[in-house]
Image (cartoon, rainbow, N blue to C red; front, side, top):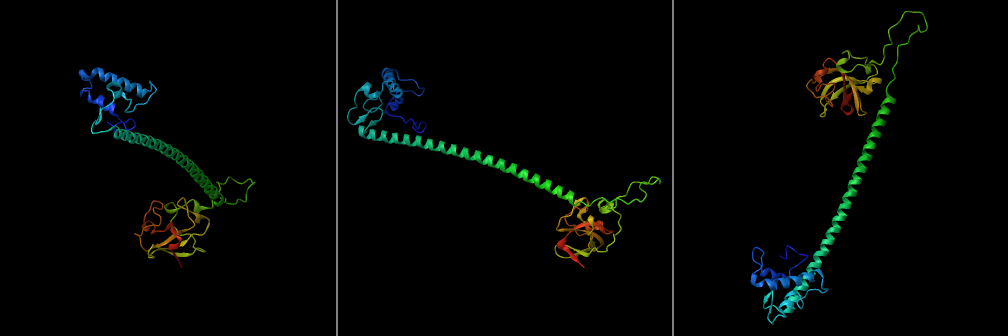
Length: 276
């Protein structure tokens, strides 16, 4: 009973009242008048209606039955003195105070933890917002840089502008390397002059193919993707190992060098190119 109500421990009056109840909660008829008197006094003392606190000397049992005889206490039993009972009640009061203090400490800790969690959530939200903004700025900067570095479109010069000559077809774009890549480009090797010959190696430095590095304006783009600074765009002239895997596959939908037996452009890691 005390464990279920730690902040309101039972006293000897509670024990006496409980001892005169049946299992169904009704009071024994023989004890009903005295039971009601004791309970009424306890209720008044608990609510502070009579302005006094309940002790062994003035609780409901003492008021109804008089002072206890030596050697026993009503509601407690024999061989228990008043002094022992007072000590027990003092210890109970200390336990109640300690429990209340612990409850206050727990409530304070919960409040501090809730505040910290709220601050952490706010910091996480701000961090995510700043991260997204930084990524957007970085992407925009990259796109602007790509636009600035794209090679200009050069048209075929026409000497008859302003003349009465017949209509000519539209100018043909000269930067053909930007228009044709991989399978869509005619499989004829471009002029290799001023383009270093290389041997393509795998990560074990095994020779896989022979070709030359593209060094003109089209070297920055291959199969519609930008070539990174650590990579090179290479024209394949001879395939030594057709089943060898491509670097950063798939490239133009292909996974092995077998697709480049007849030539073609691909991207290879610069550190795995052996210059001849």
